[in-house]
Length: 291
Image (tube, rainbow, N blue to C red; front, side, top):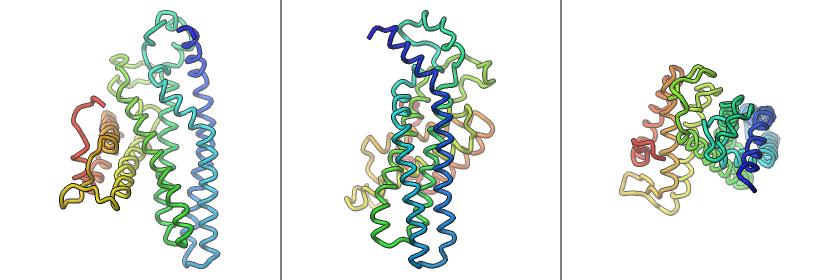
């Protein structure tokens, strides 16, 4: 495939991002409602009768089915977006064929649309997954052993995939080149990360905080039986994978403090994270931004 044909395909994909994100967001709301229904069923369960247990199990299975369907429909799109992140319409140039592409109306028209919408979708969708994990923890005390053993690995896998997806997206955002000193289209300075565009600070911060907690909890769970800890303080040994995820996510969280709302919410999240996991975070969080 010639260079021009390849970039035509990228531009064609870029032009469809908005519609795909809007459709995915609408379906994500449906999944959120199913997850909230688990919480409602749990609140109604004042005892451990079979009827109450069954309603919770059915609500969880309904959420799992909806998540699987949404993953099948949109995860390939998200993966393709991450693979071609630098070529979506926020980057000021696309190395080869730059002069030809710069004359294309689509390239000028949607400079921030594709990336910002994709980031918004990732944050909103995966925040729902982290919410499901929290709701499942509360609901699990009403489940029998067999149901919990069947569902717990599924929820952990969702959490693992969600944390990885958020990490990959944040890393792409942090690696974007600075476009200009001031962006007239959105009124935000160049130092403002894409995670601050079209995403309310509370959603972005909560998603990042939950992703950090998820990475730590998943690693603590996986190393508990293997006893992979340092000394007597029970700090898991960094292996270059999970600790790097935390490093990227922490940098993404701190990058949000350039706006007033982002500064307030990210500072609060950072305090909570340090109170709970200060020793672990200090082992993983580096001061440079060379991710």
